[in-house]
Length: 328
Image 1 (tube, one colour):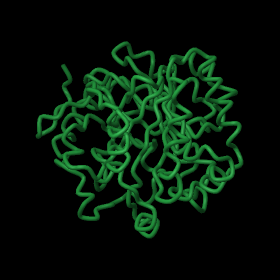
Image 2: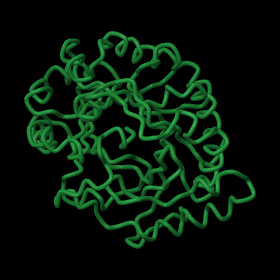
Image 3: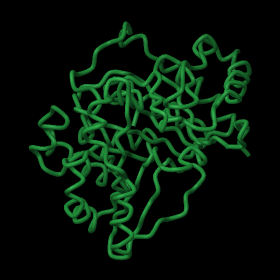
Image 4: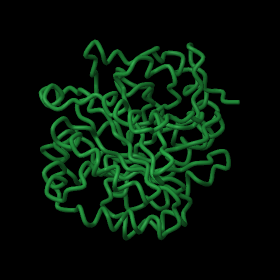
């Protein structure tokens, strides 16, 4: 049983670990001007040894799933080694990555061999020109090749993240459904969230995932039970489709009630909520194996300060200046 339990009796089995803040894409809902360092050099992010220690601590506290995020995690030259280090924890059953597909076709087989068990790829449009307009990169065909390479490498399912943008991709639901009908893809529509830098875009482009849900239910899609290490998506299946649909709706009522996720930033801070203030510093306890018990105590103790909800409905964006902080 997980030892990570907060004051509201929520149990935490899932860690989202950022390994870099750097991203090479310029998605208009996230980093429209490209990545800009905030005083941190690439060498300032968690080292391989620090990653090994922090994931060991979480594993001993009951964590069963780790998602490696960024920025773009594959920009780390040691990403394959990072994957292997996390997978070495026997308690961790799932090691996942969220990637913008930059090096997917080239490296996915090596990631799989290193122990990667799950894969999320960001695809915001199935139209090459619209894809470029959203991401700032003419990489659509490379993305499709990367997804094919993932299946060839042995993944039996690939999750695809699509940020919902009103009057941009919400109007192409039929195209998305046709794409997943013959393939084991889980297409995850993610509601655009308001951030400190993105209020204007939010007002212009936010589209409620509940509208997609109604369309799916009218077509016979059925919501599935959620597992304890699953993420925040509501998953829908249809008997005529190999693929699935996931809906991530942070503005939905009781969204936080099923929270099972904690985050550690690339600078070694434990964030109890994406939209929470500050963070619990862990890095001073990551330079030696001898501080493992102190590290576990600090993680468990910090969890008692987790709030019941994110207060997004009150316009609380806090430290989240852009969506690159979300880490997939």
